[in-house]
Structures are given as structure tokens and as C-alpha cells.
Image (tube, rainbow, N blue to C red; front, side, top):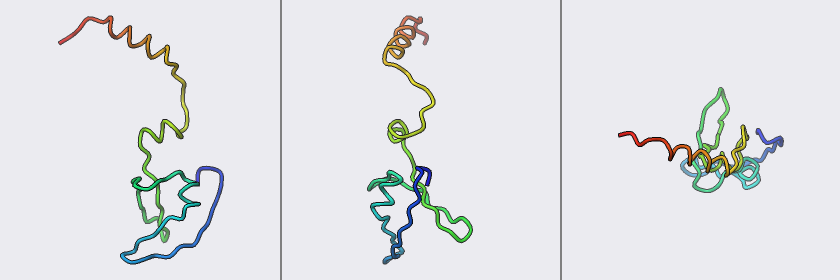
Length: 86
């Protein structure tokens, strides 16, 4: 699952082939109501993959660096000092 814990839950396919993702599974992969997902057929399996937006990535995604507010302010000041180009 990507978060270090494998969970298996049985559920039933409803009318119009609707499948409800059990709360324990949704919580484990951090998906919520209204979130978009990608559904794929891989061999004889169905894979449902959450589509992560920028906010989710900022909160939960793998961190590749750290930017401090002071660094953002310094960069902003440097950019504002550059001559205005049309």
C-alpha cells in the first residue's frame, strides 16, 4: 500500500457497479470523499489509485528539501530589485 501496512477488507459491488471503499482502507491511504481516483485494470486485478493534488503532496508527500520563510523573503526581495522588463 505504500504506507507500510497491508489491509484486506471484503466489500460488495452494488447497483451500477458501485464499490464503497471501507473507511479503514480510505484512512490507510489517506483518501477522502470527493477526491479523484484513477481506476486501472492490471491483468485480472482492479487497481484504484488516489490522484494527489498539490495540497496533499505538501502535507503528506515525500519531502525533498526544506525552504524557510526567510529564504522566500530574501528571494522575493532579490526579484523585486531586478529591473522591470516589458
